[in-house]
Length: 391
Ligand SMILES: [Zn+2]
Image (tube, rainbow, N blue to C red; front, side):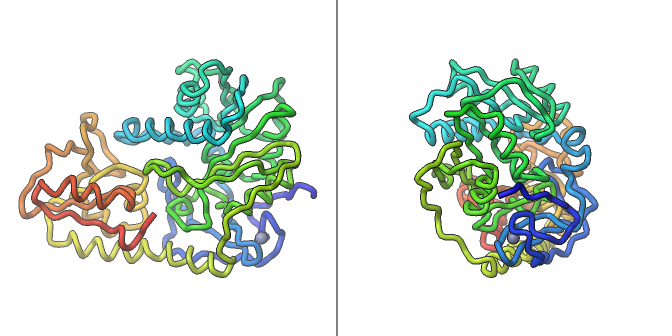
């Protein structure tokens, strides 16, 4: 099978080449990136009705501009360190547990960001030589400051590197590429004969917040990602759903090798028609959520959005009527003077706990029940919206 060639502006499926792309309706003429940058571009997500692949079409991909090189720095968000570092440790354990029989001595992080995942991997493979590759100049610099050797470039067949690796892993990158086949094919080139590639990315067989971001060009179900990998000569050794911990949700982990395998069985997936309906309903839920939240907060003077997580980004973008009413974001111990999507960020001790104040939970729907309970002693109303958007 030859590698598919992507034309980002065409209305043709990247994977199966059919021309049955159908747009997931979205009312906004703006969107959010996974770096928390609001861009004046519609979401523009299309689904192939033949194979079900969700892809960004009829618009340039941010990855084909200088976006990742110059405008992408994921962690510039108040409080991110507290929440994200444990997540990376959990991801590193997840990878190690998926390949228990392997002891890689050379490891490459494809899309290493500022090196937090490399640091977490060093914790589980202390003897290994770890390297990263990263297109963002700022993030490459950040990772080097942590002591890692980082190549500043994209993973692409245009890049020649002079060594191979026992383990290449990539966390949440493949869905951002403009050409996932070129990405996986390049990693295959850089892999030792007996090595393995571990890919983690969102599992799009269940709609979730992942596809509300416009710098994400593809959303793969397990079967779809395996199909693309096979077109690059990679064979699936193992597939896993997310571990049972809150910080790694809606993700999948796939282990690929060069040689033939027994091809493990993949979970049953919804049909393309079913997927389309689920995805459409998921996007529409944000509009309904905006109306709901606006109504809930309308009689209050102090509207505290609790949290600065990626879900708060999504609320700030896709629930604009609500966001306009937000007076503060609240986290524990923010740096003085910090702000989040144009709202001042304050410590929870600085909230005014009167009858004119309300808290709306700007956190992952899966955490809202617990958080509501934790905050109930404050004695003011707490608004959840996990009945409208569940993941
Ligand atoms: Zn298709």
